[in-house]
Image (cartoon, rainbow, N blue to C red):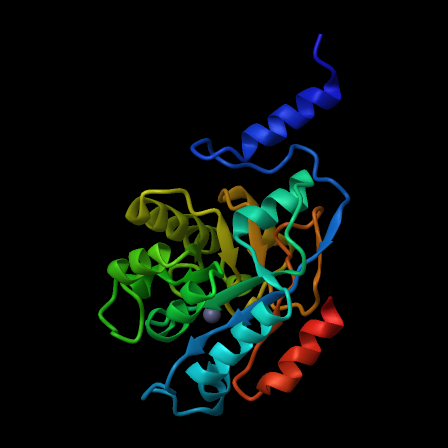
Length: 260
Ligand SMILES: [Zn+2]
């Protein structure tokens, strides 16, 4: 007879085998793992529509971004995928030394032009959380389906950032559900694979929204709560550090050193 422990490990392994749908363990473990998750928005030139300091602040110049990624690489950091984080957090799988997850919010096209070539050269995977209404819209500032496939080709994982980039905590339950479920379905159909990863617009979440994220079938979700200690009990409240264009390489290094 197969022991409960063996059965649990077989089920855990099966849950992370390519081709089978991924899932969270029925009982979330109490484990924590230290993984800095870096949040970027634009990498490129400040866009024409950036009339406010906010978008300017979120824009990282291509050379600075390259310097930051090269700093990570030189200092022994290993960029990991969503799947690796899920495996380590929920199933105790090993991670490479000094793991870091690199993420981009909003789906700006310049990520493909300026960030992806650097990441490809350094063999660093990353995640882009995209807004499906913009993927299917006509604003050339944002990635379309072809852009998303090109990012996937460069080692990116695509996650959802809702349909309309709205504050989910202000919506009715039904409207929030549509933002979460519809964006996941649209991306899964468009890319031909499940999309199990989510980022809250503006980091806005509450217990009701977190439950809806889980019910919509996501497996991991990132917030804008700073910090690097990720808890297996809270896969929908992953912590992230925002990397602003004004940070500079010295502060970037200090942030990563203090975290690991
Ligand atoms: Zn956003």
